[in-house]
Length: 297
Ligand SMILES: [Zn+2]
Image (cartoon, rainbow, N blue to C red; front, side, top):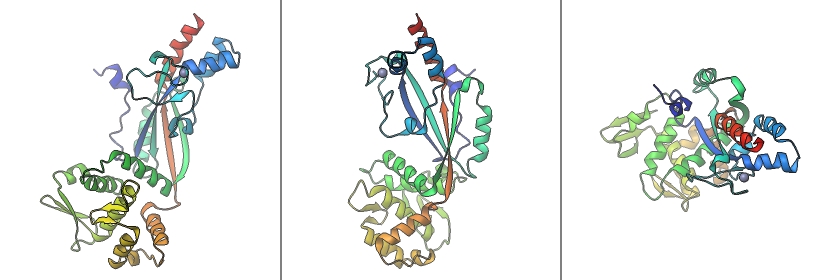
């Protein structure tokens, strides 16, 4: 039989890698109760029913820098940075962001159906974004997960990009034992595995170079790629001579304009994406109850 904590875990196995992002944030209930009872002068019972209904915004749950009464901590026994309260006053808010689209729609509907409906244990929010914005958020998260000190990040970034581009392929299997990734003119599209080498078709290979350039340019001087460290001018020249710009109908001469077009082509530009946020409020509801019991006592 599954333990209580296992049962609480949501099952993401039907979602392709890279389509779900999770955020964990702590909410200080001592801070919230103080605001409601002391600053707003509500009776504890009224405060309790108000707080129970609290529906955080996506911004509060995912902003880089949390604001009171929200905070982040990786410690086992964190204290509230605003009021110094101990762990028993903190509720854990887990938020999951699903990128909408063909690759996730069926899995998302099945997941939503399986969630308990009572007491607003889960809060759903939909936000519209652009393909470009979502891509750069993905890229930023990817950058945080890579170790730029070792060259193995180049292959890791390639795999992450391919997982995102072709979610139906089992990339864990394809990349098993891969030591080198090469461009191959013998294949027109897709990829081919030979021994410990993975060959990629030229246009896909150029996309990989662009992703490597973009993800590493803030960490290193210029961008690092399978083809070594490249400045923007070198990258653009390479794409021009390999016919990649022609193939995409990019006729701009200025390197920044070319980069802009390449990015638009790679990401889908201003095309709309729906982002589905699922907030798990279960820990919050339980903690609010116990904290109220203390206040009322
Ligand atoms: Zn606090």
